[in-house]
Image 1 (cartoon, rainbow, N blue to C red):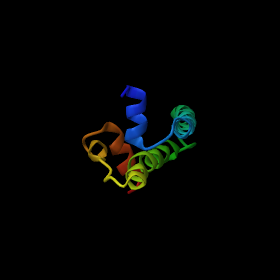
Image 2 (image 1 turned 60 degrees about the horizontal axis):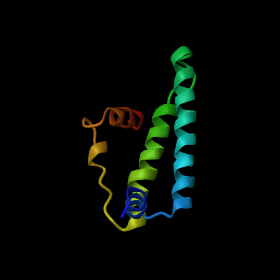
Image 3 (image 1 turned 30 degrees about the vertical axis):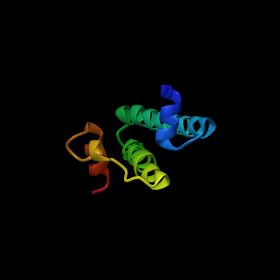
Image 4 (image 1 turned 90 degrees about the vertical axis):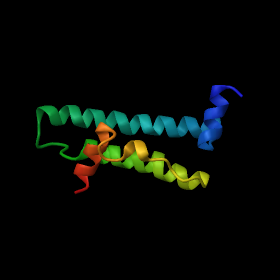
Length: 94
């Protein structure tokens, strides 16, 4: 089995499902990046937009994918202290 089909099997998506999800993720990441760039120059704007995008994408990619596939989601790499982004996520939810 090639890498493409293996990945599609791993995430339990068709090619077009995966394309749509990947493009949706790209859009969320792009808007989050733009908001963070604006926030760098104007700290009063988009105060939590970047961290809320990260939290949303984590929920969608790790938690929901685990529920969709019937497998337990392995979010160990997203636990606080093991991934630099997790600090942003945990701080934004406190």
